[in-house]
Amino acid sequence: MILGVAQKLHYAKFLLSEHSPTILTGVGVVGTVTTAYLTGRATVKAVRIIDENSVEYEQMYDQVTTETHYEPTRKIELSKTKKAKLVWKHYIPPVGVGTATISAIILANRISAKRIAALGLAAGISERALQEYKDKIQEKLGVRQSTSIRDDIAQDRVNNNPPQSSEVIITGNGDVLCYDMLTGRYFLSNAETIKRAENQINFEILNHMYASLTEFYEKIGLPPTTYTDSVGWTGDKPVNVLISTTISPDKRPCLSIDFETEPTPDYYRVH
Image (cartoon, rainbow, N blue to C red; front, top):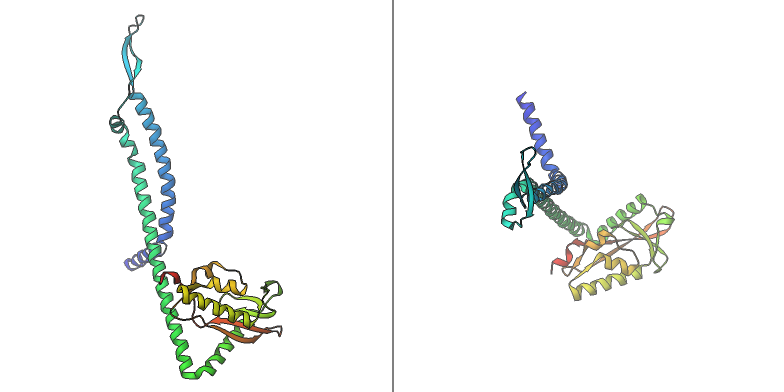
């Protein structure tokens, strides 16, 4: 019994930790609306209280019934300090809810930032491990064998993702079918255009210390994507486009392109 309760509590704690940014964001949204509502309600009360205390009343007597009543005589201009003393208690709820809302938003942002940083670190480690693996394969098997393996992988990619005529991008730079392994897009170009773009990107890196993947795609006539805008290369290694000759499922020659050095995020911040 106790063990079952402990397991459920542990699972609930895990769920709260896993979904904490979403929960805190929801708290922030609800808190924002609640703060606005409470502030409006407190303001209505404050206006009424200040208005009531800004009127001076004079005691009057009704000669017929001899009853006492009060009549307003004139408006009194209250100081800001007096107004604050009259209404400050009514603003405690919206201030409290607003503070909690701001705290939830800040905490959600911090948790998300930590997770993004952890993912970036993991991606960097995986990328380094993959590059070391590639280098070791080339060292053990030789350039010819490693190139053959790369070509086989490119052929498998083409076979698993056959081109559709409506999906082939016309770049105006050639009529050879090409397949970009990084984004999975087919386009018409030629090896000369691709190699020229490689040289131009390396020139950009040499002079400006970095270049984006979007710049490379623009030079071969491919439209950029959200991903290509966020990754690129620095001056550590030149861009080396790997071109593999494959055959499409409809028996057309196809050039598959890949990069020896993968583009990395935040490339422009390195320098």
